[in-house]
Amino acid sequence: MIKQDACSQLNLKKCIKMKRLICYLPMLLLLIIVFSSCGNNTNKTSNTITTTDSTKTGVMQKDWGEVDGKKVYIYTLTNKNGVQVTISNYGGTVTSWITPDKNGNKSSIIIGFDSLQGYLQKPPYFGALIGRYGNRIGNAKFTLDGKTYQLAANDGKNHLHGGIKGFDKVVWDASIGDTSTPSLTLHYMSKDGEEGYPGNLHVTVQYTLTDNDELKIEYNAETDKPTPVNLTNHSYFNLTGDVSNTILNHTLMIDANNFTPVDNTLIPTGEIKSVKGTPFDFTQPKKISKDINAVKGGYDHNWVLKRKDSSLKRVAVLSDSISGRTLEIYTTEPGLQFYTGNFLDGKFKNRDGKPINQHMALCMETQHFPDSPNKPKFPSTILKPGEKYHTVTVYKVVSSER
Ligand code: GLA
Image (spheres, protein in one colour):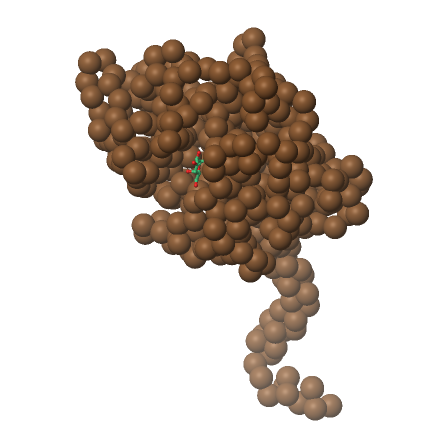
């Protein structure tokens, strides 16, 4: 009765319209829900690219801050096994790699921070992309086609890892891959004269996390003037997933009969020396602790990888009995810088607040040899206009149990 009264008081046409609206309301609501969920999951072809659910296979993008007026993001790549790698477009940094140990407990085998702030405090290249030149260039200079180039000296008188503001401290443009395997492509244009290097260099790095628990890194570059290029990644690994355990108990094999000895500023002497009978012999799996004390300061050297050509090949195997994890390293590069975290001193704390002390993490940097621009006998690192720089490195985690 009351309803009828209310209706009769209103204009009859208006009343009918309202009733229709009430009928369509549930349908309208349904449409809104469907559209909004599509927006959140930004589906691209067969890849589940989700901005809301980091447990699903695909890539999740999250705001992480701003540097140099550019937006910084953190991307979570998740494969079908639930293994996750997080990467930021700040420095192209791999911030974590979360994978199960032999008991199925998950932890990150890469040290790092969960916030951009940590990286802005300039840790020693944690997880970062290194360029234009990985490792040192002696006296921060080189001569190319008769011209001497003065680079930024940021390691005493030497140039290290691309200079004061290397590729590890810039914001890269990022795009999420549209294949079913989660991937992230980063691009950076390094200007002619940046840190002293000649030529505009376009660099593209693609990170892919495969369903075989491999982190594949593909490096590409092109230049408009001849320039040295030697790109690498500076992830620090501790396979136990806990920086209270030293990496000295890890076992390592490096498929190399030779290494490049260094002077007291860590610049190669130019000699290529046999590892036989030296602490540098890792041709058979050996505990890192076994001979490290015979090497002043610890290992921080380039191994000359045994290879016939530049195909992708397994060059090193690192394993840890506590976690049951093994890391295999494959590369197309001729060298491997094995660094036992000698300069880590507890100043930086890992994501869980634990101090990262000496030998609590190690690096396996695939590369050309340090100081190649000044060492004519080393494989050349000069990229010329019209040439395409292309190298591939794969880090593969093998867990003894799943
Ligand atoms: C490289 C170098 C080391 C050291 C670290 C960063 O691995 O070889 O000497 O500079 O980077 O601390």
